[in-house]
Structure formats: structure tokens, C-alpha cells
Length: 158
Image (tube, rainbow, N blue to C red):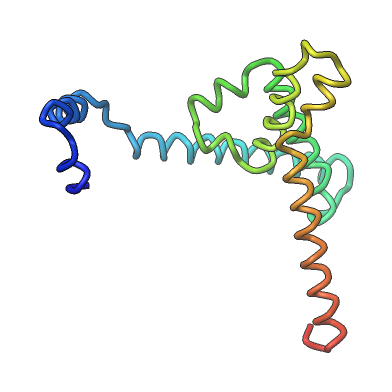
């Protein structure tokens, strides 16, 4: 940092000092607390949905996971469509990017952005902009882990 300051003219150094003086300090602790509670709220809702499937549809704790994930993705897509998820994201920051709901938001927001281009090229073509890479690398990673587990099982390690 000191070497960069040596290369600046006195006017540029004065400007940097003025900029640092007027720069707003970020409330890091406040943002962390908000993200913690927003992420926790999403997790609480997910747990409630899971219990809903267990008690009303006779799922087990193991089998309630898949419908819970699908329901949470649907909720996040619905909230994104109504513009509510964006406000939650502005308030909660990283807490709104809890993997499942953040994934749903990413999928639907890209398609909403391009809806004027039509359903096929706009919505359908842009829906998997971000989600496509997540799905690709998720499936590839699952394949590699399954392959390793199978090989270790054949060798009697597992």
C-alpha cells in the first residue's frame, strides 16, 4: 500500500485522504446478525415444512427431505415472483442465500428478467443460466462420490 502512495501525485493523495474521511463504515456485526436470523428463519420454516410432511403424510425423517426441498424451492420462487424475496435479500443479505431457497431465487429471477423475450427463448432459455452449472457440477460431484464409495466398498474398506 505504501508503494502505491509513493506513485500518486500530492493531489491524488489528498483526494484519497478526503475519500477515506467521508467513506461510510459498513456495519459488519449488524449485517452478520441480520443474516444469521434471516437464514435461521428460512431453516425454521424448512423444519416446519419437514414436520408437516412427517405428521400429515406419514413420511419418515429420511424420506421427508425431498418433498421439503421441493416445497422450499417452490416457496422461494413464489416469493421471488411477487418481489418479496428481493426485499428479504436486501434486509438479510447472505442469510437469504441459504442454499435451497437461494437456488430457487437464482433460477426464477434470471427467467423473470428475460420474460419480454418470450416463453421459449426468454424464460426457458435463461432459467438455467446459473442453475445449469449448479446442476451439472452437483450431478458430476455426486457421480464421483458414488464411484469412490463403490470402489471402497468393493475393496472392503467400507
